[in-house]
Image (tube, rainbow, N blue to C red; front, side):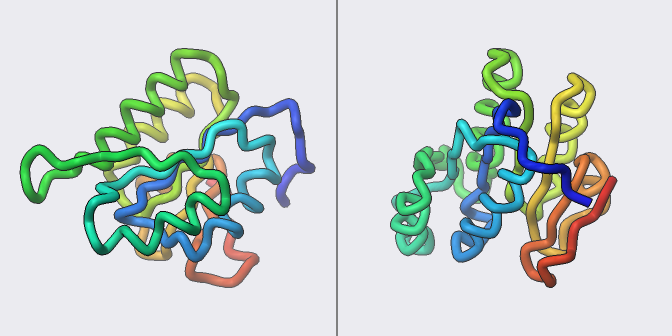
Length: 154
């Protein structure tokens, strides 16, 4: 079962806009805030891309800070790298007690493992296609494309 809301736990919710649905931002926030207070909310992507333009307004409505991740070379994962760098900065700053990473991308597995090794809370939120390695690196993982009871305890 999900622990009761603890406002003393400061969470960073970091969203890979290339790999997560903004239609589920409210559900993501509800999931994460069962564990603490969302003090950092950031969403990463190349906001100049037409494919992401429709995602700006929902992100703003839920008070996410839009982080521009322009690719330097076509086909590279600049968004992933930008999110990971910010997460490591937050980890080492000591300003948060935990993270919720919204993505279905296995590239975040080492990040989740590193956060867990520091003794911080790590939550995941993504589609059922998410690789087991990322799911199992998180304390809890919620599937965005399944029923509301789709919480995986790792």
